[in-house]
Image 1 (cartoon, helix red, strand yellow):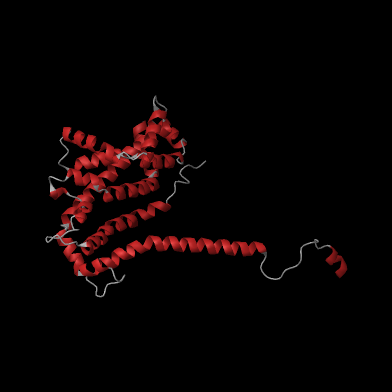
Image 2: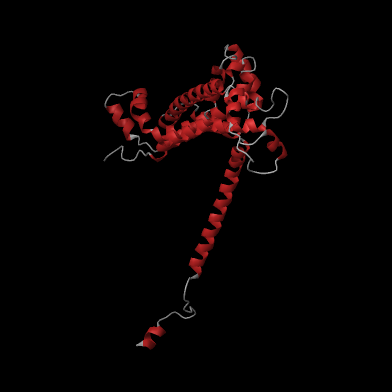
Length: 299
């Protein structure tokens, strides 16, 4: 009996006790993966740690750069940065501009993506090609002067509405992002709405757009972040009116004090304060990441 069992074992495969070569390979793969993720986390979080610790240092400690952590926590840097940078006014300007850009971008990009996904019209391929090219070609510095001249012609060069209009027009990435979400919404919903007498526009706003909530949340978060971090356009359009400056422009003004001394510690304190609205936006939009449109059509 034992001889027959032994004879059935494949030749050339010695019995090994413990881990097999396959399990050892998986252990090595997991180890490399975790080391890579750990290195990525360190490289990502270390600049944030430097900003946080730098915001609690004195100006002399920042200039010498001897240690990573401050000898004594300087919480008054935040109060001084808030006062010098006129944070209350600049934060309102940034919030107003970012919210308007986000709403405008979502409205324009969602309507454009819906029409491109659901309808055929002359020049559709050209329109999509132009939108795609704008995602990979950076023309910011080239078109800055024509954009400013256009806003002067529209009498919007002395307000934030000019900046808002320009940022809303740069919606290519949002357009393609929402177009991908539209493809996941069944066309049967449109057909059923048309049978019930709903028009194209009403179908979009009353039926399709509510199902696009996850896509709108994700796209809106990126649009808000882009508008909140914009620096060049607000700087150009608010040179003659400092009361309209945004937070990014105000933070840059903290670099030098009244005595022409560098105030990097105050800039870092202001940077930490400016991160808070973005964290709030991420928290509010986090729920939309896990919403799905599955089950909207039962058949």
